[in-house]
Amino acid sequence: MTNTFIALAVPALLLLSAIFILLFGFSSYYSKNRGYYITLVTLFITFCISVNGVGDIHSAEVFPHIFNAMVVYDTFSATFISLFLLGGFLSLAIAKSFIDKTNFFVPESFVLFLFSLFGMVVLTMANELLTAFIALEIASMAVYVLVGLNRESLKASEAFFKYLLLGSFSASFYLLGMMLIYAQVKSTNLNVIAEYILNNDLNSQLLIVAGSMLIMITIMFKIAAVPFGAWVLDVYEGASLPITAYMAAVFKISVFAFIIRMFLTNNDFVQLVFDPLIILGAVITMIGGSLLAVIQSSVKKMLAASSVVHSGYMMIALASIEDIDSSASSAIIFYLFSYFISAIGAFGVLSYISKGTDKLISFDDLNGLGKNSPIIAVSLTIFMLSLAGFPSTIGFIGKFYIFTSAIESGYTPLALFGAITAFISIYYYFKVIVHLYFKESTDVKVQYGYKVSLAFIMISAFIVLWGGVGTSLIFNIPGINALNELSKYAIQSLVF
Amino acid sequence: MLKAYMILSIILFSIGVIGLISRRNIIVIYMSIELLLNAVNLSLIAISGDIGNASGHVMSLMIIAIAASEAALFMSLFVVLFRKKGSLDANIFDILGNKDD
Image (tube, rainbow over all chains, first blue to last red; front, top):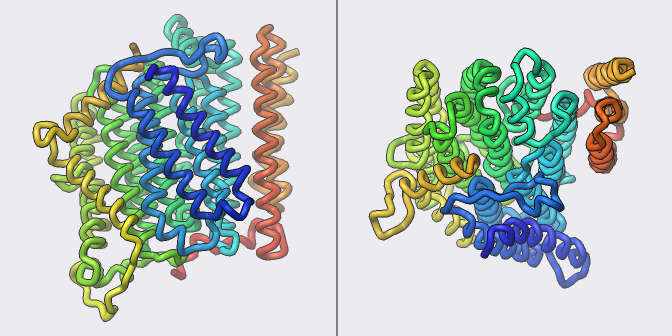
C-alpha cells in the first residue's frame, strides 16, 4: 500500500461509513446494534490500513497541487492515526455493556464518534493553522454533542452547555492568534512560519509572539492545563462514562499530536519564548490537578482530576524538548501511549461496573469487588498501578522516560517536582485499591455479563503489563523497545 | 486605513468578551461568541486587502462556515436547556460541581 493511499483511505473510509449510517440509520433494519457493529468494523479496518504506515521513516505532502501543502502524511501522523483508531475501537468495544443497557445511544451517536475521529485524523496530518483549526473544530463539535447525548439527564445537558460555551470561547482566541500570525508572515503554513522566524530578528516578530500565545491559550484549554481547565471536572462528571473515557484518552492525545508538530517545526523560537511559560504551566497544572484529585469522593471525578495531572507530566516533556534528537520528544509519545491505554482501561472498568446507570461511582461502591469479581478488580488494580507509575507497568516506563529526559535537558528541579507529584498521586490511586480489597462489604455477588467488554478490558490490562516488562526478545511480541523505536521514527519523520 | 479596521475589530472583540462574561441570558452569550468570530473575520479581510494576499478572504469564508455549524449546536443547546427548566438564564444551571454526591 502506498502512503498516499493510506492517507486518503483512512479519512475517506471513516467519512463514508459515517454517511452510510446517517443515510440508513432511520430504516428499521439498522438498529442501534447494527450502527455499533458498522462503526467497530470500520475502526478495525481503518486501523489495519493505518498501521502499514508505521515503522519506517517517510514524509510526503498529500497531493501538493490540490491541497496546497496543507496536509502532510508522515510516520508521525501515521503513528497517531493508528493510536486514535485503536483508542476509538477499544473505548467502543469496552462500552458495549454500557451502550446496551442505556437508551440514549442512537445510531447517529456512532456517526458522531466517526466524525470526531475523522477530525482528529486530519488534525494530525494538518500542516497549516487553518486546516488544523477546522479539524479541531470538527472533532470538538462532535465531542460537544456526545457529551450532551443523554438528553434526559440534567447533568449531561449542563455539561454540554458548559463545554460548548467555553470551547467556542477558547476557539476564538485561536482564530485571533492565527490572524496576527497571518498579518506578519502572510501565510499560515507551519513550514513557512518556521522559515520566517529563522530568517528574521526576534524583536521584529512581536505579532508572531502575541499570536502564538493566543494559540497556546486554546491548546491549554483543550488539554485542560490548570488556568484554563476549569471545565474538566464538570464536563467529565456530566458526560456518560464511555464518552468520558473517549475524551480523556483519545481527544486529549490528538491535541498533543498537533502541539508536538507545531513545537518541533518552530523549535528554537518555542524554546526562547515558551519554555518558561510551559514550565510554569506544568508546575501549576500538577499542583492544581493533585489538589483536585485528593479531595474527590467519587472515582470518576478523581480520574478526571488526575488526567489534569497527567497533562502536567506531558508538559514537562514538552518543556524539555531541545531538538529533534533529544529523548524528550520520543518520551512524550511513549507517555501519551501509556496514559492513553491506562485511562481507557480505567474508565472502561468504571463503565463496565456502572451497568449503564449515570450515578457517580463513589469509592465505597468498589468495596468487596476484589472478593466478588476478582478479574475486574485485578484489571482495575493494574490500571491504577500504571497511572500511579508503579514499576512493571507501562506507566512507570513512561514516567521514567519523561523524568530522565527532563534531567538530560537540565530541568532537574522539574523532574523532582514531577516525582513528588507522582508520590502524591499514589494516595488517590491506591485508595481505589484499598477499597477494592481491604474494605468489608455485605453485597452479594453481582453478575455483569457481557464477556466481550470484559475481554477487551483484560486485553488492555495485558498491554499495560506487557508495556512494562515485555521486550521483542520474548516470543517476538513488540514490547517496550518496539514502542520506543516507533516513537523515535515518528519524531524523526518530522524533519525527514 | 488598516489601522482603523484593526481598532474596530479590537473593539468588537472586547465587546464580545465583556458580553460573554457579564450577560446571563444564554442567547446573548451566544451572540457575544458570534461577535468574537466576526471581529476576527473583519480584521482578516482588512489585512488580506492590505497585504494583497487573497488567502485571508478564504479564511474568513471558512470561519463563517464554522460559525454557522456552531450556531446549529447552540440552537440545539437552547432547545435542550429550555425543555429542562423553562428558562435560558445561565445562573440556574448550576447542579454540576455541587458537592452533594
